[in-house]
Amino acid sequence: MAESEANLILIEGPLRAGDVPRLCARVTAARHGPGHDVICDVGGVTTADLATVDAVARLHLAARRAGGRIRLRNPTPALLALLGLVGLTELLGLVVEMEGHPEQREPPGGVQEAVEAGDTAL
Image (tube, rainbow, N blue to C red; front, side, top):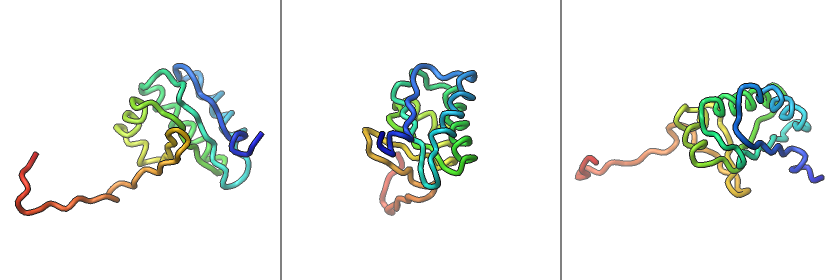
């Protein structure tokens, strides 16, 4: 098994509070040494609700306690939007991978737009 595959966890179905301890144990077990992120492929997660957000936050915390972090692979647009809405994407510095391409979210305040004097308000 390749190193990146050793750190991969497939997460499917609806996520509920009872799933969190088992998933956190999987994240801790999948972390192999410093600098090795755990990739959580959430493409099969069928829910985008606060229980799912709580699960993602707890997975991130478990990885941090083990000395690393998680990368979310293939989140649904609804889950990605909800994580952004509640502020977890920026707060946790979540790294999101879409179709295998990593995307680091821009830190808050990192992008500023200039306003021209003649611009009308939208």
